[in-house]
Length: 135
Picture 1: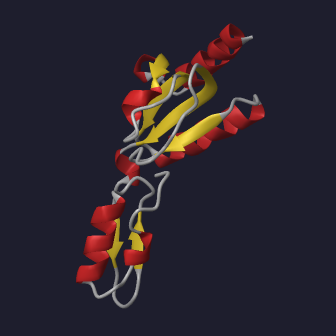
Picture 2: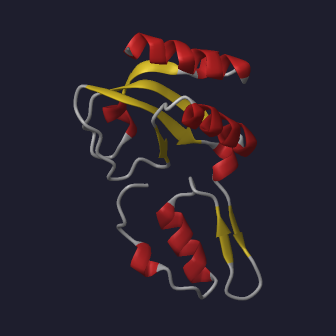
Picture 3: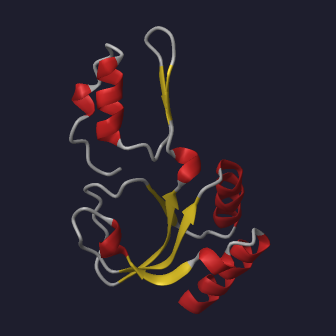
């Protein structure tokens, strides 16, 4: 069953010319601050927003489970083989924009601590976000 799923994942990634960037049976303990967990069936860094959207649609249509990973802070994966694809959010998701007035736009992979500090410099208090796990 797992091999069939890996074949499906490879087909999807090949259609986006990403199969060479995927790592299969990746040790997820190396991806988190906790340094615990087993191996996911596939790991891939996604740098493009539109590609992410398309891949997620393909995964959903084929019932392939996935997890979107930011910095990996305080994320805990199960031991053993984890039947999911871990998609690490890359460069297209690491941005911040401080607008005029009380407005901050941030990508999902932007470092939370840096976000809090930059917002504070703009007189915006997001200190309550400090220490939130699972990024």
